[in-house]
Length: 490
Image (tube, rainbow, N blue to C red):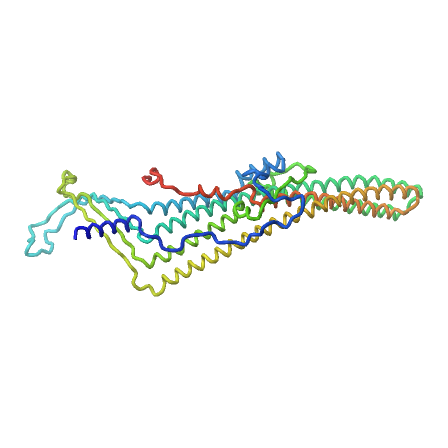
């Protein structure tokens, strides 16, 4: 009988200390992954992490001004600050759940002085002897602990830790999105500066052409139609420059917001940029699963949803609460800490829901459906990531080819203007040929500036689509760990 009792005690202690964890063990869901990108030379499939700087991916563009703006954005952008605050909230929420591993201890000291009426009701055992005054001083302590027999607490902590990692991945994604948006706006701004310089140079050229036509018209060598055609093209070009200034201001204001500055107080010096896109490597599609913070965020959401299933299933099992209270109680404060003044009690209670009207089953079904939704969301995020990289890779290939072709087109358009002008001065053609050649050159120079800007912006989008040098392995350190100073903190 003694052995049986010992085994029973050991079994109870083992269940109390270790228990069991209900619910499915988490495993990352599979997602369709292509073997390679649909690319041609000069693209290669290797390790892009070596080509994109971790944290400061914008350094591949070798622009000191852009790097300075990016650092300001990381410090002052309000969207990033919101994500930082949410990360702190997630950490606090995880710490709150980790704290439930430990028992609670509370106290509520009290002191009371009361007078009992001399005319109070009495019984035969306690006859009334008159009014009585007495004191009641109590120093109690109450301890409580809920044993995690079936893993509800462990699953809850697991969900909270995964939610903390979700917030960390979300912060990394917000930083990537904001810094990429800034870089895209920065290169768009300089594209507009290039277009404005083209328009301004064209205005100067057209004004000289107008002077030539007016002088020929005064000498009877040109008609009023020639003058009107040149004036029309000149004024149209001036109008385009004015409207482009408005567009530039809008982009500049967008950059100001990203930097956390009031738009009226922020200005960037106009600068025509002839920068070339950096050499980037798309790597293998399978690497993308570890490099994109939004994919990591969706994967951690699956872990949260999986833990929710275990939490829901634990409701089918009983809960065990242990409690103890004790302290000192006396009528005289001088005797409060005497041994005779002590009191205590220990106990336990087990609770089990017998009838819930199907709520536990419904809660479990709800959790399972939530997990299926998180799996679908994860796979959708992965598919969109592959689409973004493929679109940007294809876009860069097309833009590179278009840029080379457009450079040749601009060269041809310039020769056409020179030839048409010479033939007009020689009286071989009318001025309409010159006007058409000037308009064609202007359009093609603007198109070349647009393509140059699009190449840089698309390069930014590709770096963003590749994760900006981020690595999901960094999430492993994002956990709330039990530390003594946190346990004893108030």
